[in-house]
Image (cartoon, rainbow, N blue to C red):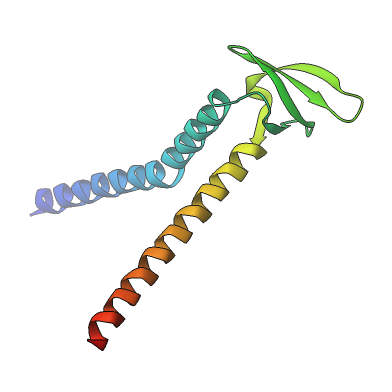
Length: 126
């Protein structure tokens, strides 16, 4: 009887440890890996003409892109700075393009819904 209770408490402990590891994975590790992947995607899709912000807060426009570095131009005096790609914080141009594409897709969906409603109304009138 004593062995049975001891075995079930060990099984319960193992289940709790596995549950804690699952929580850590889904709450901490997985989202961090997703953020890293998105940042790497943003850095690899950098193009000439993109408006960007660096980790240090420098704002400018990309004028040249190399394998692991890029050259940006800042301000009205057109100062050019060469930086490593890992120093890129945000790509404002890419964010604007994504926002515009989302807006266009929402408008297209709204037009399709309106067309379906108009078609149904015509059928009901007949």
